[in-house]
Amino acid sequence: MRDDDELRDNPHVSLRALQAVHEDLFGWCLSRCDYEPAAAEDLLQQTYVEVLSGRARFDARSALKTFLFGVAHNLARSRFRRKALRLRLLRSYAFTTEVATSGSAADMGDDNEKIWQAVAALPARQRDITELVFCRDMTIEQASAVMGVAVGTGRVHYERAKKALATKLGTMQDWTKTR
Image (cartoon, rainbow, N blue to C red):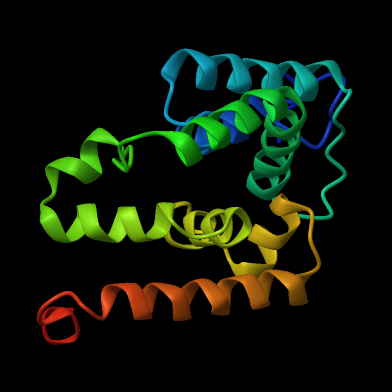
């Protein structure tokens, strides 16, 4: 790492390394903010502020991507706790059961829409670990670190999510034959 690329308050982090994970980190921030771009941008900016200021110090015990996802996850959890409660209440008592999906998933067809509806119906931790492993290319160990749970707990949530998805998606015609 070059000296001019290294962050002053976080010497184990380089600007190039931040740029390399920026797109994935923004995607994670979007999912933490119910796919509201403005809120995701705010969360991403706050994550960078924490890292650049040195308040969140990277000590190289994990991958930088895992560390950044964990910082964003913790900020989202504390920052959006009240909003998440309101959203859950609205969803519980809403008259429609429509599930919000990202634009790219909705454009890919009925199968993807059914898959994302099934994922959205999972409990929060199962949904989080499923997204981190399948969409953000993390291992179960890295995903567990992001979520702030033990690796064993992460594995349990991952296995339960897979079983629940297999049950829900088992009704899709020819699911196992086409995949």
